[in-house]
Image (cartoon, helix red, strand yellow):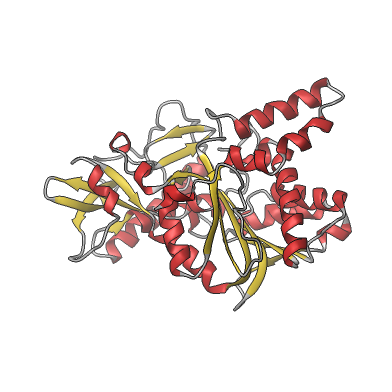
Length: 397
């Protein structure tokens, strides 16, 4: 199944000359990496290079990849859709921060820093609790530069609270945030043949292009039991990097809570026979395509999150699952509509804009159902679910 590297998939904006040149440099780098690894690399290795290779990868070279519709962005996230996402989250964080005597916020993969800036504005306006530090952990130098520009526009008292960590300290106590972080972590690809599951990787085609290649899994490889639900010919993802990241978080988080927002399913839904083509998707120009080997570095590559695997990794690391629900249910429980009401009381175009954004956050056909939030924590005094009514933790087993 060879991938074209010259023509854009149908409907996508064509790359400009600079983008094509960068993609070609990255492809040559990937081909050298394939040769160095004996002619085959796993898709997780390919995805790491395509997204994060310094100076060449999608996130490493394109600071404007996310944002509002139009322009040069490729996708939009909840904080860009509506300021009420941050406003609702601010109310929750202030309550937990006060009750649990937690003083810092740590956000992983802060993107455009829109969430960070909006949260600090909302927390300052409320004045009941402000973080001593708002820490951003960002692997992309290009994205960090964009974040620093956004933070510089904040009032001085808020801007000085924002710092960037290059490495996690041995232990930290904090309120942890991750919005659409897990879906961008490299995944391994599995393909079911008649004789069983094999791993799909990337090889060099005869003309110097990139192509798919299969190899056997090591003897004794343990896969999630729900994979047996998928028929021969199926392709799916294995989220080892996300599980390892959760393990690292568990190793360093002393006392606190992590709220992780992303699109995905528990394992039994993830491996439903109707999802036999997997969940891997690419994003460019606010359009979706399914050719991850096309022009590496020019499209975002994501996969839906296996929240059962996240919960299992958290438990193995000593973290407790403190709630799991749809984004819509969690935001409603945290008071989104109460926050909306006074802001639209005057009517007008701003009220219409706010209502449209809320519809996208809550609508079942938009973000409301596909997106979930999982709360993980340790050492907290609260015993009830942090997401409130509609908790679906039982579905994670």
